[in-house]
Length: 137
Image (cartoon, rainbow, N blue to C red):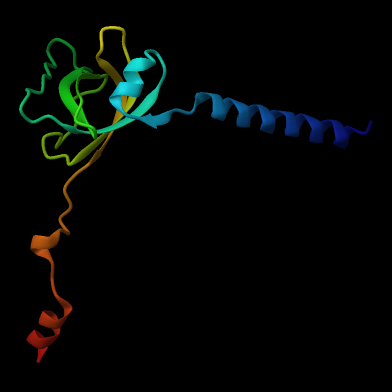
């Protein structure tokens, strides 16, 4: 075998290994019922912050732990332990995507979180193009 063939085979093997590794490490979207049914498996859970419950963040005790309650899209409530400092504007968020796993005690251990915050481009600030055109006349 030529040297170029051996190098090509090694590159192909590494690419296949990387592809298989990325498929194994990927998680799926689920609701809280599915996540609780499979503790220890990583999921992306979509929901909203339960504003009736307190957000607990005590940096003097543990600077990388935030605890709050979330409601998934079906209305199921769950206590969440986020392994990060309290995100800025958590209270203002419209939607949360938690990345983590359920534990045996029925709580969600999130290693990361994505937030959808309110847009400054909403209906109450909408500008009508005809109004803008008539104002220039």
